[in-house]
Amino acid sequence: MRTFTRLSIFGLPLLMVVLMVVSCGEKQSQGKVIVTEKEFNIRQDTDHSWVVDAKGRVQNVGNVDVKKVVVTGFCKSCSEVLTNGKWFVSDYEKTPEQKDTISYLAVGDEEEFSFRGVAFLMDQSGKKPQEMPEELKVEVISFEPVKK
Image (cartoon, rainbow, N blue to C red; front, side):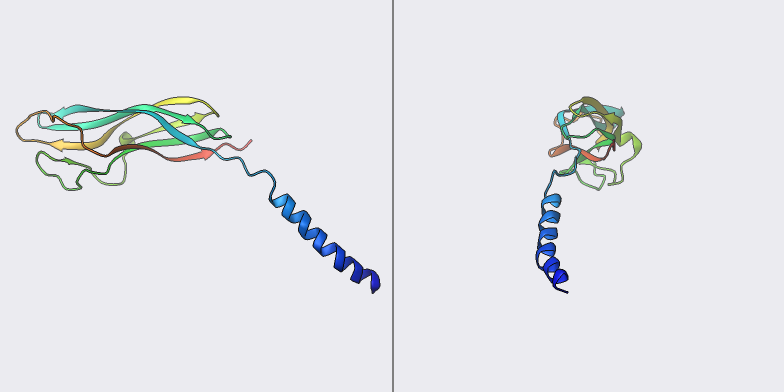
């Protein structure tokens, strides 16, 4: 009984210290992908409609390779209602044309992306819009870390 008491008094605290040291060890590797360049341009789609398209580059700045990197664009200042002469967005569910998927991106590598349909404009007069919509963004919306 005395041996059991001694083991309990010294063994349990020692076990707790060992578990804390092991759990505070090196953190798991994580992926991180950032947009390094972005460019928006206006393209005439029909006689009375224009579309904002995007292209640029993303870079893997994490410490693991990543796959299935999905990049898309958003227009935070655009309306959700189609109004003549005003920039609008279709809806929040992006079509395959409105996003780009990069299959594999190694640590430190950069890759180009391009997609269409960030924002739309209908104008019955047929005049080309003079300005881009405000608050255009490109974001990496998902990726998967590659397990080694």
